[in-house]
Length: 394
Length: 188
Image (tube, rainbow over all chains, first blue to last red):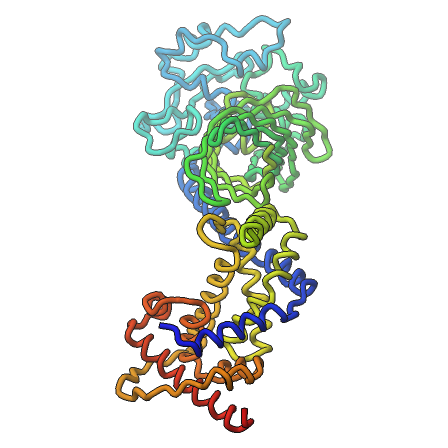
């Protein structure tokens, strides 16, 4: 219970407060601005660290799973002329790697059509299958390995046997591409007759990209880049691509339909770098391929959890990418097709102001379109990654 | 009526601060700087430290202004609570509290005469409060000046209500002795 003494002191203190002139707003303003910067760094740092950890984890897992197949897909070596067999793993023809029974009703795929000029007659695939599926002509590289089956080769090969890897049906984890599988690790060589290579180099010289006729080997997709850039060199023995993960920047625009539902769009820029390693008979050299893409995502986001400035959301949608510039060494390349991909994403968002937010989005994207330019994306249609960005909400 | 206007003004000020209006922040700072400073001064007894803590208090106030609900409490009460909490945290971090039961040392309070007391300058009273030991000063401030109950003080400081009551009693005894000594010394 308060005494008179307490009340008196309380009144005195009240009087002091009312008449006191203290405080330095200018100094406080400076201190407060500094505090907000520090606070922002403290908030962003764990988000960036978490995103980095997720990315590292995803890449780590991805590399463990894909180690073998990626090496296989990225290698496009050549062998000497008259080599009796070829072992081909062709990214663009992955759809062709089906059991032979299914291939009898094979219809031309996008990759088939792509490398066949419209003016030229189509390859008689069934005839090729019949021709090349005769058992006495087939010499698989590893007979004990039941996962190797013959596939048709093409008319320019005098020794028309080819094998391709058919992944085991119960191949664990890997679902990237029809031809994926951990068993590919042991087959990172593509052997082609050197004569064929010479033929293609001269062809490529006469016909720029896109003018390849059906008479040329359909698997020239493997050779397309090397041919274009390293023609007139008969000493080339092997050409390997080493694709680096893409560097992506983007700006995103969110339009909220309801408190939880938002339409997300924006503009993404992606840079795909690939190192092309060329092995000659007497030396090795390398050059860099760079593909610049602009992407337009369109996605619906649903906010699962929201508290204060934080939001956790998930969404799905599509993204269209267009190659705006491509270059390999000193050669400028052209890619006119659009790339369509589907995306599933989840993310956390922190509102800096009412309209401005930063976000971190782990996402999963699957590329539906085919592209003639080999890159990390074309080799890994299923992409799992994370984005950091700034979002302006209207 | 004046209180209602004040409440509306404060609610508007808080709302503007929430939106990041810097002029509103400045207004709030100027309105409550004395209050916050006095609280810091009374709890720490050190003017330099009080100034530093005042800045910290306003940073906390502006960081949390969006949580302020004008229907639950006045802005002054809310700011006082935030300030007191920060000061208690500061004192606790710096191990300023020593809680010793003083039940057995209970002494009689000889309260100063009111007629004499009114002649004691305000700054002297403030100095006397500031010179109290940390624990006693804190409990005295919380109970007598911030109108906390012993239960609330006990929860805030993590002590028993009885301990709070004992500490307050001792603080009153010390303060009364000092005031009486001052009155006697000055012949008031």
